[in-house]
Image (tube, rainbow, N blue to C red):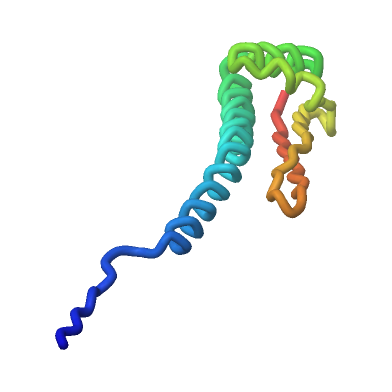
Length: 123
């Protein structure tokens, strides 16, 4: 009597399914998080440009700084952010405040993400 043994090669269907589920979950989170990350970097870029242009073409009033920020938001096609910032006078300086909220859906719960960025400019 001859008994032959067959060695299994490769992974099982269960390990393949687990791997695909983990990969799909990572893609699901990434699709939500990457645009939020790019939006945050764009706001940082706008604040950096405001600091740089304040030397060459200073905004004297809060209204001037407000118009500059709105123009930069329009250039970056971020018009939806015009209600999420304000410019205030503070001790002879201009304070630019971006404050907005986003959510990250983790399937089992929703994680609120608060963004708060400020910059103080000399007049």
